[in-house]
Length: 310
Image (tube, rainbow, N blue to C red; front, side, top):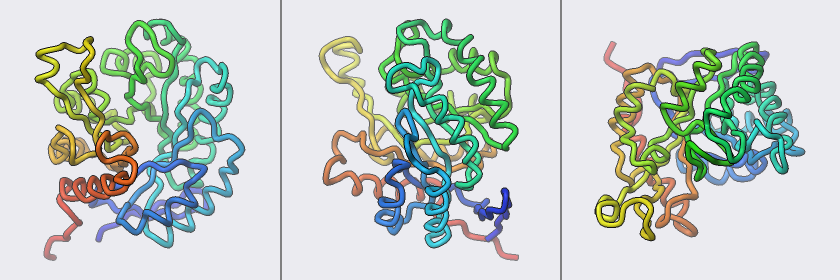
């Protein structure tokens, strides 16, 4: 199998170049406990996540312990993430911006070049009013990251926000993306994309991905099911739910098409399953659903890499 060897400040990471690794999300503070329990199911990568703050986590110690597990089980850390509002610094978000900085500074120790999360926004204000603050905060973070070979990827979740108002994130869709990347035209700013968040807004993710794939740095494996009969009868503002987040393999998306488009655009990253959202495969069925998604996505990528005859 063809491999590329990356050496980064004394830490060696071996990444396969002929497969698109499939993994899952794990809470950063719980990673050392959880990864040994689930890696045996065949997960090939892990996206480590923090909610609003990395808190008292010793990132150097965490990286060392996770890299020991990675060497033992042949997985990679695809991204490290913080989900909060770095633009306000208010309330529980007071450490979110500092956590972005810490993750950027420690990314190399995890063997990853991706730090991801929400953009944040000015709470209760329209998206366009958040752009100057976004440019101020992420212009500086982009420079900090570029100096360390790190890319910043923005989750495309609306967090129940709209164009007019919201609490967490402005990176909902193409109109906002155009404004963001025009405000900070840095090559190391991109998207942490998944079809689910677009489908919740009744956006067709496939033509969107064809256009935006060059800006996709990381992919979350989460799908959706849209009940079009409910939409036609009740609309989207009625009392009937019309869309559900789903684990890949149970939703409406053809992930073989998604992976094809990513490959056509030279995507070198992973797809990491974002679990804990499926309304059916939850509770005791959570890992059943995730392993189904893992095997489904591996089939959609074409299975294992098979070298051609010499």
